[in-house]
Every structure is written in structure tokens, then in C-alpha cells.
Image (cartoon, rainbow over all chains, first blue to last red; front, side):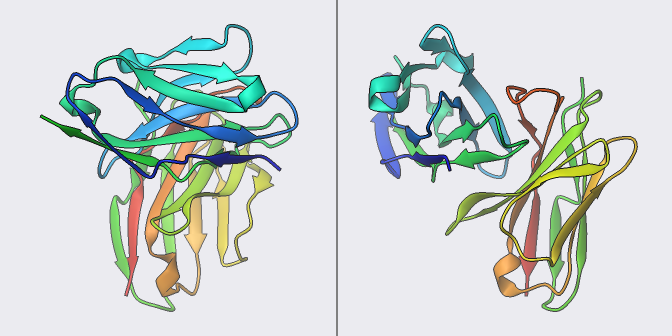
Length: 114
Length: 114
């Protein structure tokens, strides 16, 4: 069964600084990988996804993620953080044998300081 | 295009009661998945419906059930509520025709059990 680990529960970053959120997955084949963001009291918004092909994926809001098969990782990055990026970020993995079921990581809370 | 809508947004019930939550998917989407989100357990998959049929289910007790109507709207029912059922219930819709279809989430229903 697939699993997802987000090692960082909480990250504090200064506005304008770069951000990297870590995600490690466990799955036998190439998984379907996603990053979602959740603002307080809101549902989840898709930032980007990876299924195959180019391992560097561009998403919305200036985010990108890189798939590294050798490290079983799918880390999310943003070069310059804005105060509006404060939210909780979830990495998720889907599998080709499991309709509708994503395995989510525990989430990383991002706090942006002035 | 309208997003996924969930009603009601907030609900307060007492132990032993039952509750029904509703989810209207994005127009044209035939798959609806349900998730439970709690601070302790994170996001957990409940079940997925496609064309009125349950295709997948998670590891929840039989008190949790769902159904989907011919217009793809879905309902989730929880009977004999327990304090531990207090959570944010999220539904997500997708086309549901391939495993790579993106899931789009609604804002959730916040259920509080007293």
C-alpha cells in the first residue's frame, strides 16, 4: 500500500524568502503525486500534480515540485514567499488500482513572518 | 464553472443522532469521493462513488455510508454519532474515467458532535 510522509509539521519562513516542503512517498510503481494547499476553514486547492514525463512540474501561485525517483521524493518549492502563502500544505499520492482514494501526508503548516 | 459545493457548511449534533451531508460535484464530473479530516488522524478516505456505484471504500465502520444519485450528487450518512466523529468532512469530484483525473475539493462540512 502507498504511504506519504511529510517530515516537517511546521515551517516558519520570512516573506520574500524561499520555501521548500518535503514529501516522501512509498509505492512500488510510479505513483500519481499531488500537492494541495488548504487555507483556514477552506477545502483543498490543487497546486500541481505529477504523473509522468518531465520531473520538474510547474504549478499555480509560483510553486514547482521535483519528482526524484531515486529518493522517493516530491518536494515543493517556491522561490519567494508571499504572506498569502501562509496555509497548510498536503502531499498526496494516488494509485492506479484505487479509484478516488488518495493517501495524504499529515500536512505542513507554513507560517510567513514579515 | 461552479466548483464543488457542500451543504450544510456547519452542523452540530448530539451523540446517538444521525446526520446526512450533501455534495454537489462540478458539472460533468461523475465521481465523488469523501474524506474525513481530523487533527489527530489527518485526511482519511471514506469512499468513492461513480455513476451511482461505490467503487472504493476506506476503513471506516458501517455507521458511515453513502450514496450517489443519477445527477452525480452524493450524500454521506453517519448513524449513531460518536464524539470521535467530530471532523471536517470533505468531498471531492472528478471525471472519474482514469486514475489520473484530478480531484477537486469542496469547502467541507464541519460536524461537531456533543
